[in-house]
Amino acid sequence: MIETFNIAGYTRISVDDELDRDNVSIENQKAIIADFVKTQFPGSSLTFFEDRDRSGYTFEQREGYQEMRRGLMSHKYDILIIKDFSRFSRRNSRGLVELEDLRDAGVRIISIGDGIDFPNDDDWLKIQFQFLVNEMPVTDTSRKVRNVIKRRQADGKWLCAAPYGYIINNQQQFEIVPTEADIVRRIYDLYNNDGWGYKKIANYLTEQGVPTPRMSEQMRKQAEGKTTKREVKAAWALVTVQGILDNDFYIGTLRQGKFTRAKINGKDVRRDEDEQIVIENHHQPIIDYRTFATTRALREKRTRSNYRGIKKYDNVYSGFLECGDCGAPMFSMSRSDIAPAYTCGTYHRRGRAGCTSHHIRVDKLDELMRLYIRRVMDGSA
Image (cartoon, rainbow, N blue to C red; front, side, top):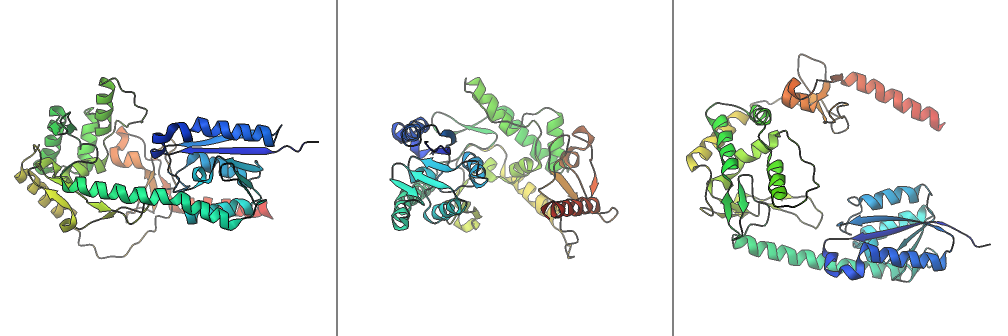
């Protein structure tokens, strides 16, 4: 009797792979894996998982892989089959650790193109060498990309999407969008002359039905006949208003190289102003220098705090709670006149115009957490 298995087939393609679509396309990878299973494991079940436009340098950002991994670790699948190890990982150290984790969970991994059946074929030196070869194109490409970016920044060429209020025209120049420019000027006027804060300005723009920057971008693309899948929100965010008030791009200054990162998937680190590339009078401004200088002075004055106390609340539940009605993250309340609690983030920003408070105290959350832990402990006994 022929032994059958539950097999997971994994396929991946990154943005760079589009240049070699015929060779590494998702469809091509699936065809190779399906033919292999049909020949080597007749009668076995095959479930495909895929990641499109995902780098092979990390595992965490690959939704398809993470879903498959849960199935492998829970023994839902017996064998993992890939076209070659470059589809599995392009990071030497991380890929080898992941491979060992799967092996320790009892998973059999077959790389068709590399001729490896692990751990049946336990040639660890060969596997290490293959991962090292796969990592080389990533590090080399990263170095080349950084050099190109530095050169273009030094030449005053913009590398990102145009800030709100501008578009990049066919001549690759920044062109002002009149309706959006009026909103930018209105934001500065409300902050400088009316004394409004970020929250009040954001709520005002939302209530007036002013399209957010993402909405404006989406409407332009749709007017050009382009399809957009990205979901946009109608409510203005406080950080959007703050970003506009903090951006000297609106006085005609091009500032690049504000952030750097030590490695491919490392965190962005802000560079000192004297290390940034700054080109004044680079494009047509929306506001004048005096207005921007007034805004900066007011922002420094309003955000200055003489508080020298110690942290009173840990906010340990921040990032884990969502409003049951609108889905917004719950906001920590640390006021002296009430017990530590969390409230709906939308309500905190917009009041009853957005949602209701959905107030819950921290001591109640602690009680619920203790009950949950006790239930888990009782269930594992």
